[in-house]
Image (cartoon, rainbow, N blue to C red):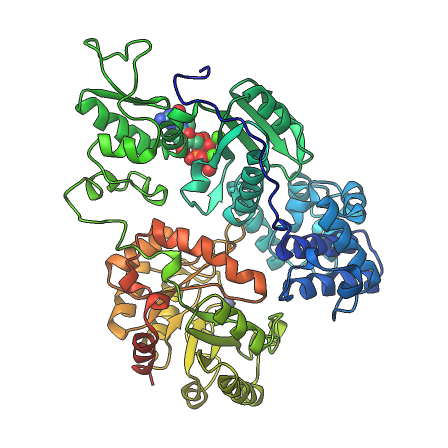
Length: 604
Ligand code: DGT
Ligand code: CA
Ligand code: CA
Ligand code: ZN
């Protein structure tokens, strides 16, 4: 496309960012991978546990691990000299040499085997070393040949579950979760933006639209020396294979197996290109139809007045192209947020003059002032009560509900009645230390298979806040699942239904209840439905949020905090909420403290 007209090219060296870009979540993820790989390789249990403890310790840190000295790190509970040195190495190089060594020893395909529900590192090791299983295909073959049944603890039911999970994984193949794609894209945008001559960089595609899974990353850039940018992009340390290397478009496959497309566009056409490559394809089609109906043509270079034949004359200057705002406005539309670009009626909703400010009514991240679902060390969290409350306060929240697991969740160290009563006292005692915070003693109480709850009503009544969630029996028939959830929704002491379906993105389908019945009951009983923001859950999902909002339900957008980094998951919950067009007025976490407390008290 060349260096299209106008737009003088301001080449100047970029300042290096001063902030450290390697986060605690990245360090923790590296230790988690070390844990899994060393377990697969049969390392001794002390070593495996040291990695696991390090992952948790880093996850729970209040400061950034990569900014700390080794001498400080090794004194931290859960870290030692060796793990502290690894953090130091990670801070400098973005990886750990031992991690690279272990990765090289384990077949790459075992990762997808390990991702199957019910297969942990020990089983994966046995499958690999005893049966020669190295990927999903060889796992399937081994199951069909009856070999997997020869391993310990592999009953017929376990194997059937495994087969279902494989089928599910295959249907999700090639798409990664948004929480894996977003950090990659963020890092790329920063990295490419530092290359001299680069004027603008942004990600587009399904990631910008906030979809729960992403096929590939689409990055757009403007640069006065595109060749130099392409050179640098294809030579990045993270690149495993260059799929295409051109002047305006290149594609690479990263070491983690993600395809990234980079396109260079002229700065004065950036808006049109960004709109085109953000999609969705169906939204683009509607936009082009609208342009044609108004005697214009829309493509990735801009919006043009059509010639007599309906063609765009060569060398024509666009009517609009520099910004998305300009293009939408020239077609009589308000700027449509990427989360709404799915051809679900957005052109009508955002037509100028129809709705005064359609964007303003939808909830936004700055509206969120409460976290109503989190776990401390009392069950399976990494933080203390005070650490969680302090973080919530630091984020400008006014309310926090501590909701550790109930007694049936023994693998998550769920609290029995006595421990819960003690925990309630400890949570209430924190109020004196955080006078500005509204602190609620809650529980994430299990909804058992028959819809009854894991604690008796008298104990539930002692809690300020009750989130009721399904964790087990997630393969029930839809009708049974519906009745189970309806019973919990109707329970007079339950405030919120946590992750209502229990699905795991790319992991398991979860319950498949009649959702419309749940919305109606939730509205009737004044029970909120949770949008669990964690990127592996996103449950309610976007389409559920939209239907629940239309049915008049209240939705709680929570992070299900287990460690400090989880507060950041809100980003994914918010994208999902916005895809569901959740009005601010129907989001519990956006209420002011008095209104939220009043809402809570209706169940007490
Ligand atoms: P993904 O990658 O599968 O998660 O989904 P997208 O939406 O990122 O799709 P992708 O990467 O194939 O293309 C990025 C955007 O580029 C897409 O949302 C719309 C635009 N686009 C790509 N191919 C076409 C096409 O053939 N026609 C039109 N109108 N737009 C296209
Ligand atoms: Ca894409
Ligand atoms: Ca693409
Ligand atoms: Zn849960």
